Length: 332
Image (tube, rainbow, N blue to C red; front, top):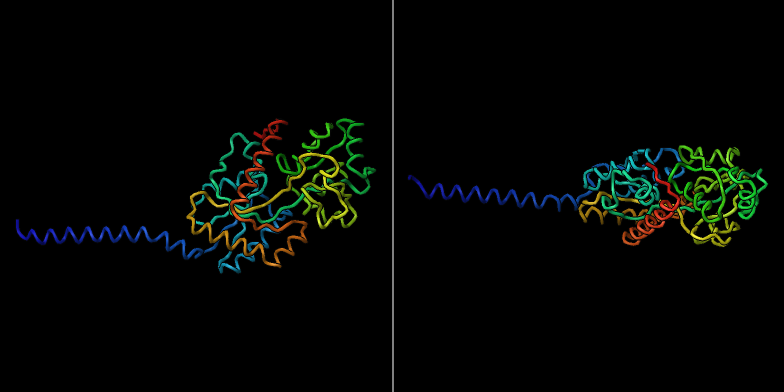
């Protein structure tokens, strides 16, 4: 066998080259994590464009884009109670470039409400909350009902006559009405609409008799004298409506909940990317301009750390699940 030493040298050289390629491949994710982002990021919103919950997302996207130096594309994917957009993110590449702007419905309520949900809680990493907002119990300004007590009395006096509107089956605007039905023992009719805007317009027009609307949707109408606010959900009164009592103050249990929107990434996203995005999101949410804008919308700016946010999401998942099961509100 001629030149055995040469063949041995070639084998060593080939092995060294393979080891070098392996080392390069192993180092690429770390470098990619360190330089992220190098291209546009997409915010997937599992709801329709133009709604009251869409405005804070777009304002946030603009501010984050300025901070990261990359465009942020807001992609609205409504459908199936938020399941369509959420499932798209769950299946997206886990590289930090596709972000879910989830909400109480898509990331807490749906896990119990839908038996055939195309995603599960473990598919996501919770980053931070963006905005939270109370629901406000409103009636048309021309309604003779001027308090929660009068509303309950009217519902008991005429079972099945009073109707409440919602932004859709399974939304907080729906489930708050169901909670009132359960807590007060009243027979009321649920009328779902295709989104928050038409549901709010329905109560303004008097098509329905009451609604637990998102404060971001009703605040302007309350201030303009088109709607009368009877109570708010949540643990404390709202700064924008300081004279309106909470449901808890009025003796109603389990109404200390608020709606929220927050950021989620696919579960296998590299930790360095998760941390960098989370840190930048929290920094933007502490921007005085963002804080002021969100308060003007009737919301409370978020920015909590990942762990307490994840705990809040899980707590809401459990609590809303108990209500859905007790009322047999299965949506599929």
